[in-house]
Length: 296
Image (cartoon, rainbow, N blue to C red; front, side, top):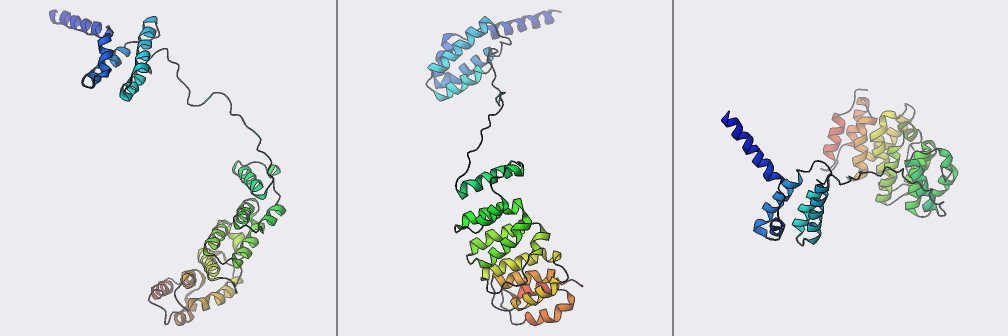
């Protein structure tokens, strides 16, 4: 019984000590590096004793607020700023405003670039086609713009609006390009087309096109040869076969990559003949393509 009374007495002492507000000397210790941590802890501990808003709590936290404003040390300012969050009278701010977001109508574009930007924004927002600032015919006209970036943006948006209209335009554009960087951008858009649309307008030959354009054409065949119909396959095989011979470059590498998808075991003799005399760089690719030939 005596031990229980002693325990209650000790607990009462602790509560009384916690309820006692830190003195002015404690706040003064905030400016002393050696005593700063202990002073911050004392202020924090006392601040935790206020569970509800009251005149005492208001007086205490105003005192802390004044100390934070007067402090010169960034560490003290940050510590007292965290203490002020314990103020029961502190109004928490919502992470988002409860007010509805204001929507403003975008200004009408006057140049091809601004109209394309407006169309892209409308497409990203999944708005109705009635809100499109450009028609399909106007987009087709912009795909022939003299500035490549503008024309390519029109091609990309046309693909999103009507892939059937964009497919032949992209293939025609690919055949005319000579810069590898531009070819790659158009190649990416062709690969983003629905496979049926892209294969439907796939040219069977790119005679007269640049090396980069022919390589992009061969890479597409390697990626989509499974979609090629039985009527177009013999024509494509006859076009790709001569491309397998020659020096190692991106075209011959792409042509050999298309072999397992386009040819079959019945074509091994012609392919073996084409693999003769290849460079050390190309020979392993040819061997891998021959080993991967399907039975049919």
